[in-house]
Image 1 (cartoon, rainbow, N blue to C red):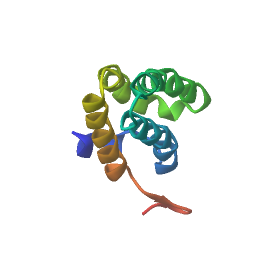
Image 2: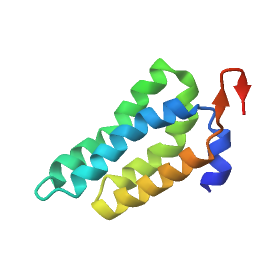
Image 3: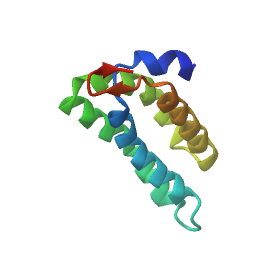
Length: 104
């Protein structure tokens, strides 16, 4: 699925990685004892954060459309969030790479 979606998202690697930084910080929170509630709250806030990014950069809309249902699923517990992280890593792996002059 990520192999099909990644190239069609219309976002560049920088946009994907910017959001991914927060995803990884939340993933680390899930592994800390006593931080589950905080991790869950931050995971829930990923959806409005992504919507805000769409307002700033409309080309992120396709990414939001893909991730929005995933985020509802992922915020429920650590295992689900880990599956979301793996899916997002796959999206990054299949996203088109660009250079100064265009696509590689």
